[in-house]
Amino acid sequence: MNPIAAKQPRVMKKSSKLSRDFLLKLELRSHPTLLCVVRGALEPLMESLGFSDEHNRAIIRAVDEAVSNIMRHAYHGRPDQPIEVYCNRLERRANGEPEMGVEILLFDCGPAVDTTKIQPRPLEEIRPGGLGLHIIRGSMDTGEYNRAGRLNRLRLVKFARPSQGDCGSSEEKPS
Image 1 (tube, one colour):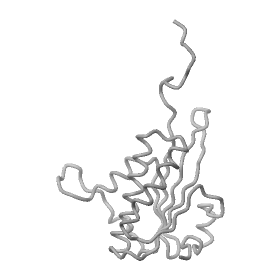
Image 2 (tube, rainbow, N blue to C red; image 1 turned 180 degrees about the vertical axis):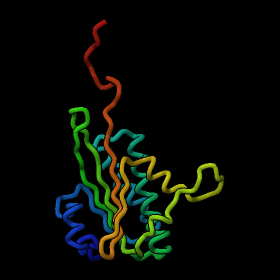
Image 3 (tube, rainbow, N blue to C red; image 1 turned 45 degrees about the vertical axis):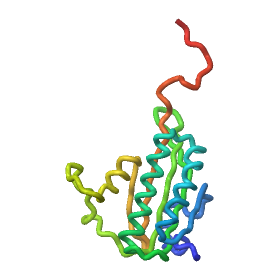
Image 4 (spheres, rainbow, N blue to C red; image 1 turned 180 degrees about the horizontal axis):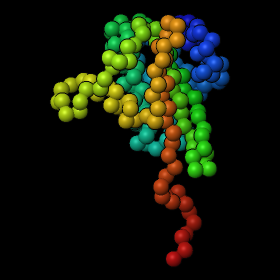
């Protein structure tokens, strides 16, 4: 399989820095049975980046939902279309302290998405489906979609929050 992101326009390469080394790169086909492969690859990676179990599950759920949406909506259930997933470590300063995070880039060759037509359904509507955007937005710090040439790109970002307690400290606190 030829990487689809490698064939993207130069503008996109600069902005997403695809020439850098990624922690994880998956090239897969749009077959639903491969969702477990994506989940299985992400879990130990998120753990190694320091995400809590709760954030780890939320990230995996968001990526699983995004890849499922590519399979269902961009490729209309065709199981042989290319999808690429890239994961990279991010770092930023928050209150003077370094905060580690992850950037997840998803690429597909489906038709361009009209973002004005993508709306999450109201949560009070009780029916199956339509909760993907709620899941993705609620799980990630950032979600950005853009189209470059013939590629759709979804960028998801999540930062690991430092723990609020001293659970890992072996020092005794003064009374």
